[in-house]
Length: 283
Image (cartoon, rainbow, N blue to C red; front, top):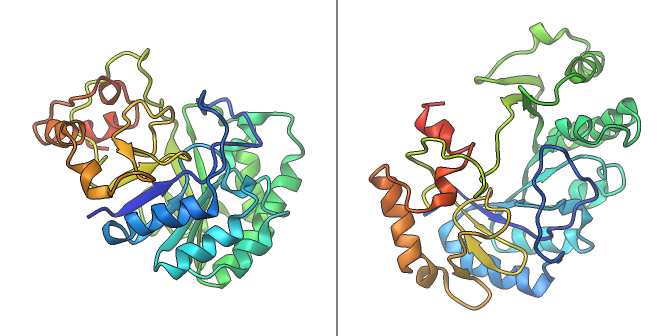
């Protein structure tokens, strides 16, 4: 039914990035029991499980257990991290079965200027991603900051050039905005985007892949249509208490889906989403 399901195993983070809205929700780690119940209810509808909405998944004390549970249930797991904890939490990733993809937001460093040394940070990321890629885990180093905090991107590129022994213009480009640094290891560029916010101006949004390509579950089980609803403003139900079919059949979920089908978003938050505006612009 969905290409991916996002599960927020924790909404705690060890950083406070300038580009991230954070959340005002109570800080919470999903328990292993809760994760198992949610995963069971998601599995018929999705194959790829993304450990991401808000929060830093490497902060979760039971990460290795959750990865093992996801693998047992047949999921291909994907993690998104700021990368700062990779040197300390490498073992759960290197030992995990079913880990399909690791995405590292390298733009987090400049978003937290003064939080350590750039060279140390990048070396720590590289030392984990390189062996993961050799184990057939897709590793994507993200620079999603074009038009935002991007003054230090050149330093990052120079570090990666030294690691690969190639100039950046020699890296193959298997797809738009991505370069292959090594087998299974990529550098991805993208523009900075504005998170949906009810105080933001309307952006001419007509369409979104929420409830089509993806669905998301917050750390307390709340189901939302996409991974950008950082406050749970579009709560559709709770997967700890309800089956997924019941939630998707709710009037709000149907109105949201049908609104995008008609290119007339039913929810005000969706009309104010800087990321969803990309679909309307054909980007």
